[in-house]
Length: 112
Length: 112
Image 1 (cartoon, rainbow over the protein chains, first blue to last red):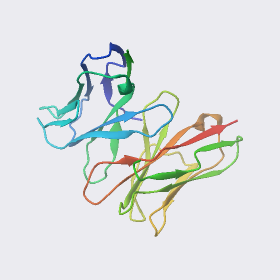
Image 2: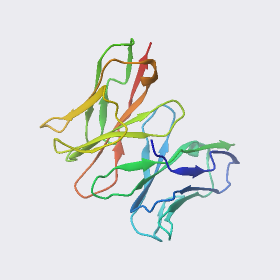
Image 3: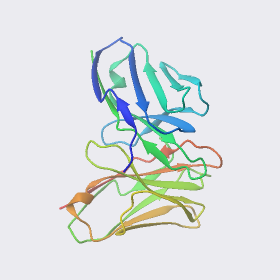
Image 4: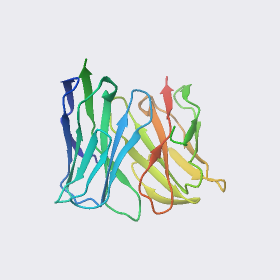
């Protein structure tokens, strides 16, 4: 099935460092969602973006809806060990169906 | 806790068998979505129901079917199971005009 490209695929960072990841597509999207998934658990919604250029924060997390509407970015500031997990983006092309396409995921590992 | 419940949490069965996975959406949510996540893979959209009616279809095999009942809970039926059907199956729900999907804890299906 179709998936969005996420980059990087995985990353190791030191506690306290800032993290950036992105999600790109050749198609235009109307909505972007960012999720975090812990092993064996369901994804948890972090941030929702609805307009091109929109910048939204949730604590140490900040996400942006790309101006071209073909990409989105997630930043985590001052990472902590509990930030470990897989981060997924999800894009919605057709608002009428609520049919989201999910990214391939960025696996984050934080070294204490 | 997202408010979405899924049962059972784990299911082990044999090839050729049929199983039913159950999902109860968040209170008030009319839309239910089913996703499949194979090992270390992203989420693949299977099917969406809105208030009892099928709204969108993704990469759902013909051996799989779903329905949403008047009380809004949903069931995903998987038949003639194959080894490759082993995966995590997630249900998500969303409400009204809100695009944000909230995921349940998942059902881990193992086909032996």
